[in-house]
Every structure is written in structure tokens, then in C-alpha cells.
Amino acid sequence: MKRFMLTLLLALPCLAAKNLSIYFVDVEGGQATLLVSPAGESLLVDTGWPGFEGRDAGRIAEAAKKAGVARIDWLIITHFHTDHVGGIGQLAARMPILNVVDHGPTVESGKSPEQLYKVYEEVAGKAKRHTVKPGDRLPVKSLQVDVLSADGDVARRPGKPNPLCAGVAKKDEDKSENARSVGVVVTYGKFRFLDLGDLTWNKELDLACPENRIGKVDVYLTTHHGADSSGPAALVHAVAPRVAIMNNGEKKGGTPPAWQVVKQSPGLLDMWQLHFSAAGGNGNNVEEQKIANLLGQEQGHSIMVEAQSNGKFTVVNSRNGHKKSY
Image (cartoon, rainbow, N blue to C red; front, top):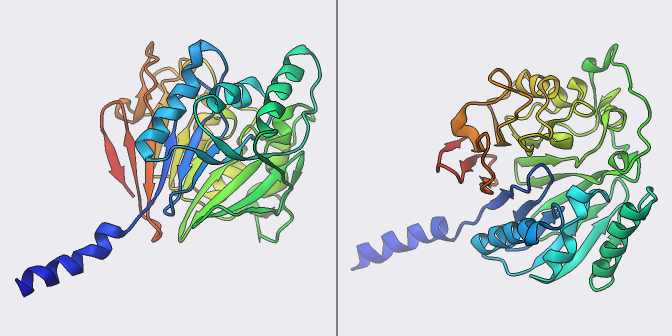
């Protein structure tokens, strides 16, 4: 009996240990990334599209249910485009949202942008609203969530010189909401996750050049769904992710030039995709087992990451159960 009790007590720390869970919810080429901290707090980045009979809000709610959370403690809206903020009203009707985070008012005008922002303000008015700037840190329990970009500005914290910046040209100025994206790096012990929303080329270069102000990361969510208006090698290769997740749609993002930049990143062990990219064809898509939704299929399969504080993590494809640890 004493031996049994000793064995049980030794096992308890392992049983009690909790990890950081990240759910990359399929919202068909938008973004909805749900993080659940070891302390049980939820952080959602974006809410996917509106319409589709509440499809994206439903998928987020289902991921939350699997994660064992009944509310969204923190919601970051990276920027005010339909595929990122559109689902907020439908999500708020399904579950409580306590805190909302944004970069400030939308910079776009017209009927559609103004309607999107109106719905956002209605939800934000019932929650606690936080407008952030680069250098801010969100008080998410057991996680360090640092704001790297917001409202067209980037963090000015010191970094290491980046030789990859030599000769890299900037693109035409982007005056859209994309360049205003709230970008964050999430740290849990030795594990680091980077999500820059739809931040575009020039702003990413401001983060990476002439110094890499981000450092290296373990998991990188490809910026702007893998569009080649984002994701310069000077940034992607400098942060040197071990694993990249591409939240593309079948016909959105996943462009061959951007895909190749990620694939060629030094130290990259694997890339996983939410969808097969039609633009990528046979030569610019990962192997089928690492794609959540195959060509012609829109079944809402997700990709999940389970991360430990020691830096180890496991990626799982919900479509086929394929998983790999790093």
C-alpha cells in the first residue's frame, strides 16, 4: 500500500502539469487563433468572417469547448478587415468576451469598413477595451504577451544586427488596415509563438531591420495568410522558426513566393497548412498529412499546438490525427 501511495504521489506533478494550447481554427483564409494558457485563461486572435450562418463563430466556440473554456478572456483584433473582425458579433452572441484589444479606430472609410467597425464598437462597448501600442504587454495569466506592432508603428526594443537586411528593398507604402495590424509574440517559458496578423512588408522590415527586434521563435504563424505582400526573408529567416503554420484558404494566401521563403528558412523543421493552396499546386504545398483541409474540402479541420514551458511542443492535424513532436 505504501509503495502504491508513493508511486501515486510521484505521478501527481506530471498529471497536474498544464501546457499552453493553441488552436488554429479554420475560418477559410481569415484568422481565428485561440490560445489557452496553463492557468486556464483564453486569448483569441481575431474572429474570422461574418455570415455563412455563423460558421466561423461556431468553429471558434467548438474549439473553446474542446479546450475547456466557456468565455474569451482576451480578444485581440489585429485589424479591421472582414476576415479578421467580421465574426465578432456572432461570436459575442455565443459566448462572453471580457476584454478586447485593438490598435485604435479603423483608418478605412466607406460603407463596409464603417459597418464592420460599428459592430466591433458595439461588442467592445460591452467589454473592457484596451487600445495598445508597441511595447505594451497584456496581463494574460501564466503567459507573456508582448505587442510588437500596432497602428502602423513597431516596437523599438534593442535587438541583434540582422545581416539579412542588406539590399532588401521596400515596397510601395501600404495605407490600409493591414499595415496597422496588432502583432504579438507570446512567451511561455522557453516557448515562443509569433503572430503578426496581416502586417505588410515595410512594417515587417521595420521590425527586422537593421536589428532583429523579435529574436527567434518556435512557432510562426505566416503573416497575411502566406501572401507575398508580406513575409520578407529578412524577417522570416531572422526569427528562424522551428515550425510554421500557414492559415491560408484554398484560394487565398499560400502564394508560391511566400511559401518558398518560409520553406527555405534556416532551422525550419516543418510547415503545416490549414488548406491546400490551389495557387501552390504540387510544388508549393506541404505533404498531405500536414494539411488540415485538402483540395476541394471545406470541413473546418484545425491544427493544434500543445506547448510545454521547456520549449518542447507537439503539432496535431485534426483531420487525420497526424501529430509530430519537436
